[in-house]
Amino acid sequence: MNVLLLIVGLLLPTPQNTTIDGVVTRFGTSEPLGKVEIWLLRDGESPDQAAPETVTDSAGRFTLRDVHPGRYVIEARRGSYITNSLAVSADSPVANVKLALARGGVIAGRALGADGKPFAGRDDTGGIRVSVARVLRDGTLASPLELPTDDRGEYRIYGLEAGWYIVWGEFKWNNLYYKPDPAPRDSWKATYFPGTADREKATFLEVTEDAVLSRIDFTLQQ
Image (cartoon, rainbow, N blue to C red; front, side):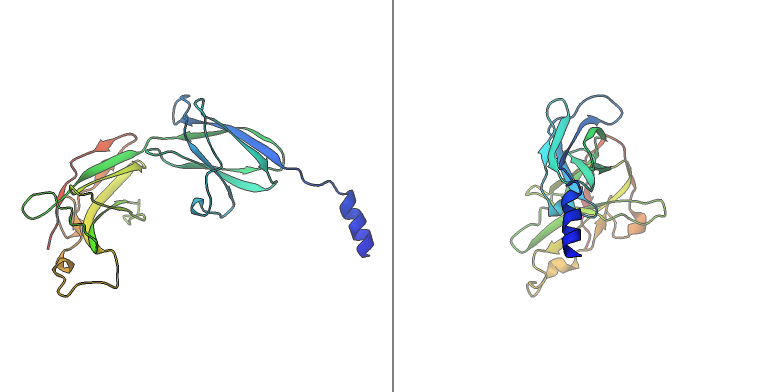
């Protein structure tokens, strides 16, 4: 029986590796986008678990070679653009895959202290972190994007999908197990733009494609 299975296995064609090629353009136009990073992901695989396979050329084109047969997700990323992806079956050569990237919006501003001066508040133990979250249709918030302010108290979050957002800032310790005693900065509250500790009073900010919302400054509350 085992010999028969071996013979059958030898007679069956061996799956051949294949290629995938395509092009990335700017959403709504035929303008090609170069320097777009292309990921080839197995179903369920995260980009954080892999590295980009290639980068598009000046004509927006890419080619993935020596691809094992199977189901994949092709993901395209470029800074300031919104990530896009497409599922493909690579059982045979796949030609002319088309992906379009929309330029994301930007929210930028400063965290201010009670004296109205920019408040970096960052040192070896912790600092001010600004979060931006999109408001979903049911009124809940999507997972926020978070980053620290720089040494001038400024922040800039880019690549945002079109929609409505709220922005807030708060002090966070770098090490959850280290908090000096006393720790007066623990009394700082999460402060929502334009300067309230009450999330219900936060101002909704509309972001459209390629929009830049600047001077979204807020004063941290205690």
